[in-house]
Length: 63
Image 1 (cartoon, rainbow, N blue to C red):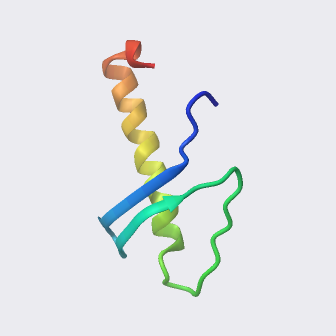
Image 2 (image 1 turned 90 degrees about the horizontal axis):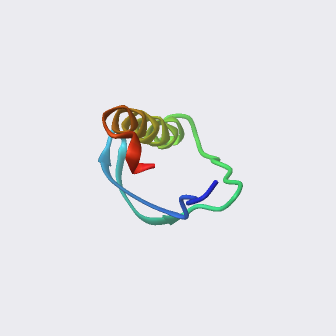
């Protein structure tokens, strides 16, 4: 991976109101009670992936 994601800020996405400057490592473990937002946190990465796929289909030279 040439440009790993090392930090993430989330505001107003589903149940995540604010998560500023969340540091990401090579391995991240999510632990929390049911309904605490773990799946919504994972959904952010699905959204980012979908955005990158669309962007790549529009302009593949941006890679």
